[in-house]
Length: 169
Ligand SMILES: CC(C)(COP(=O)(O)OP(=O)(O)OC[C@H]1O[C@@H](n2cnc3c(N)ncnc32)[C@H](O)[C@@H]1OP(=O)(O)O)[C@@H](O)C(=O)NCCC(=O)NCCS
Image (tube, rainbow, N blue to C red; front, top):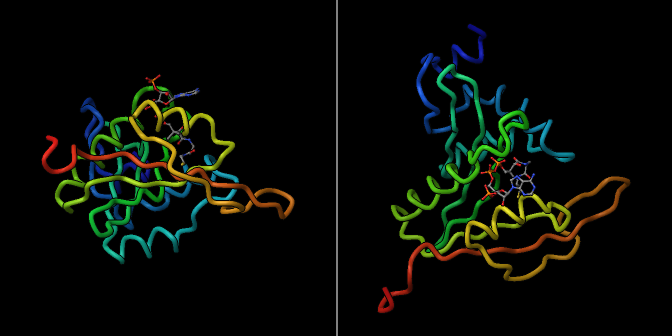
């Protein structure tokens, strides 16, 4: 068993499970992060998020391998999804959808009525995922993200209601 597997707690044969993302998982998180993004989050970004009490979850395979994770910031009646990532070798198997379903379920405990997120305009895969999940585009943030060669890239602001507004349920 690798150190990462040991840290994540291997349970061979078991189905993937969702756990709170902890500092002890950050080596595995950062290995996925640097593969997934040209401008990945740093260890400090994750530590700050955990210290701030943001909502974090990891999806862990039965053998202890980290499959994916999310970080979300609770706000007044809203949940802001800051990071959702699935390891490249586990993409296309519904893991992001599972993580998002967990986010929606947990958001109820924060009295959130909607999830908000920003996504790079060029990230067609993630935008398709969010549209399939019922998000709609609510705006654009010009030059929001860093891009290669010192350029910037726009963000698309997306939102999804968590339940029908009061009186319409
Ligand atoms: C975006 C990402 C989280 C999707 O994770 P995933 O586990 O592969 O997603 P799922 O398997 O749950 O797929 C859900 C939906 O994504 C979309 N999708 C998945 N693979 C796709 C592909 N190759 N091309 C286009 N859309 C795709 C589909 O809409 C799919 O719905 P379907 O299953 O009904 O067809 C993952 O690709 C990733 O981590 N990418 C790098 C990091 C990133 O961009 N994160 C989002 C930042 S805003």
